[in-house]
Image 1 (spheres, one colour):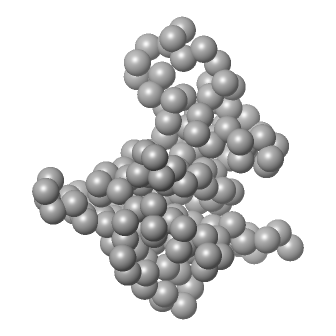
Image 2 (image 1 turned 180 degrees about the vertical axis):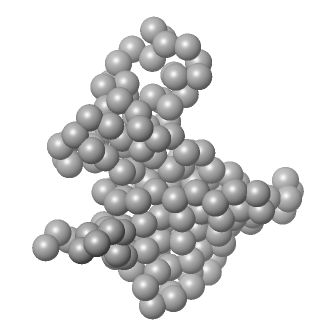
Length: 149
């Protein structure tokens, strides 16, 4: 059985990066609330270390709730904390595709799905800005992707 992606220690690291002072431990998952009063934004981040995702299949699930959206990343295989950027990138990957959910300290988030793995190591300047953005955002996770491939 594979080691879970998220331990209590991992959740604490994520909370520190996102400046979430309170972690709710809700038996099967953790909840962090991120608030940006200046810009009147807030979001809830829920992390399920191991949950049933299909018949006899379990994995990590990361969920973001805002006042106008609900985002999920299934089978989360890793994450990257960037204190400098004030964000955490949650990754899900297959042999040739990656998806990433970026949660920011300022209570913002971005979702990139079904991105070709090669994009993160390609020359970003060869693509339009709409494609370049996903490559740059997900390139932060290149180290953990190399470990998982």
